[in-house]
Each structure stands twice: as structure tokens, then as C-alpha cells.
Length: 332
Image 1 (cartoon, rainbow, N blue to C red):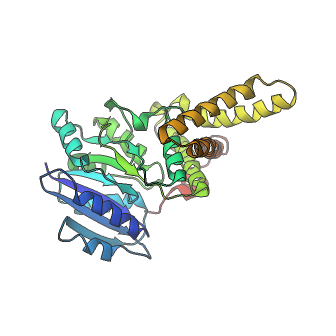
Image 2: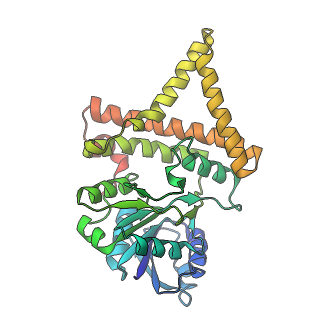
Image 3: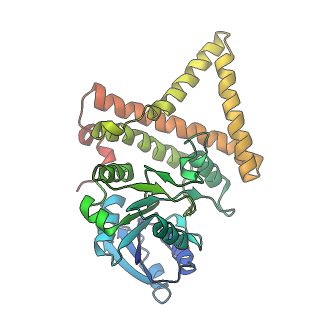
């Protein structure tokens, strides 16, 4: 098996340095390659890449900006491997990562897999809190941090593998962003391919974002879901409404509390108490526990507001997604 790591990057040379350094120390003993695709950056990482020419089999391409999905496709089209592993530039890879992937695929081969994300001790408190909110069973059901192989899993492109055959038949990622990874996954399902979660093939996902950028990110995640539900109604799930209902319920609970009815607001406070306790225990820090409460609130608010806006544009105004939500699409 010959693997190709596909890594798009945009204006983040310092991240590529950390990522490539982690790939140098992979415990996997066979040959693999690294393909870096510079997506129209004004601050390129070419000199960083050149540092690793002797220690990695590495290729570097510079192209005009067209978004991460098109950049991943661009890299896979030029890769030499039979199996592509797609990473975000803000990831750091544990030494055993490729050994774990190879073992999973030898035991029970699938044409597409996804892995969880985790946090390093060196990450900032905000990064650890955001990582908690994105992986905890209290928010996302823990699917991204599960400890068992899960079939019918929707891989995320910060840590995702796809065979050359599946890529060529599906033509890879579309031009929606974010949402390009579940879009590809569903198309693969419809073509008869299977996907799985490889729980031990995790990466350290740095997420170099502040609170405002986190809100913007999850808001776009919320906007993407009704677009995907409209495209693939057979894969729509009722729990996609949960963040929106959570925020509406919180507002309603505050109104009832003002009128003297406190039961529902107490339930919300109990939920956030659980978040605080679990976030504090997992990160061994009360400060991160407090940040985790805020991160969860931002996550639900951003996603919920984006979901409602997208639903209104698509279902009430009857606009096409490419017109009413043009910010969600890169031009082909």
C-alpha cells in the first residue's frame, strides 16, 4: 500500500512546518509521499517545504485560490499513491498515525475513512475549550471522539482517507464550503462505497481561531446542513435541528423565568454545569471548564443561527442555495 498525504494550505507557513515535522517521525516504515497545495496564498510556505526535501518525499504546488475542496482534488490528481490521506494544515500527526491507518485497512478495508481529533497539552486554553465543545458527547454526541469503529460515519476533511478508485469515480470534493466533506461522503454512499471511523487514527487539531472566528466557522456549518438536506433528503436527520431548538429553548426559558417559572432555566443551568465539570476534569483546569461553557454556547448559537437562516432562504424564500447563500460556494 502506498499512501499520499494531501495537504492544502492558505497563508499558514508556520502550521505546515509543525505538520511536516510530525510526518518526519512517523513510525510507518514503508514509503509514503506528501503533497502540499498552496491555494493562492500571499504568504507561501515554499521555503518551509524545501527544509523537508531530504527527509520526506514531498511535492509542492502553487495554484490560484479556489478553496480547500478544489485544492484537495488538485493534489489527489497529481499524487502517486493508491490511497490518499487528507489533512488540514493546522493538524499535528502522532507518530503512530500511519501505522494505525495501515493496520485498520489491512484488517477490514474500506475506500473512505475518517479519524477523530484531539488536543495537545501545548494548545492554548481557548483551543482546548473549542476542542472539547467539538468532540464531547454533551454537544456532538462524541462521534468525533468515539472509541469504536463506526460504519456509516461521515469523515471530516481535517483527517480523512479516500482510495484513488473512490476519488476518481466520485470526482472528489464539490465547490460548497464548508460541507464539502459530508457532500462527498453521501455521494460515495450512493455509489455503493462504505465509510468508517478509525478511532485510533486521531490527529491533534490545533484550530488557530479566536472566539469570533469560531462563531463564523460553526455558523457556516449550520448554513451548510439545510443545503445538504435539500440535495440528499434521504439522509436528513431530525437531530440536525437540535442546536437551533436549544437556543430557542434557552430564550424561551429566560422569558418564563422573568415571569416566575424557573424549571426550564434550571435544566439549562444543570446542562452547563455538566459541561463545566466535564470540561474541567478532562482538561484538569477550572479555567478551561469555564471556557468550555462559553465554547458550547457559541457553538450552539452559531450553528443554530446559521441553520435557521439557511432553512429560511431555501424553504421559505425558495431561493437556490448558490444564489441565496452564495458565500457558501467557491466558483468553479
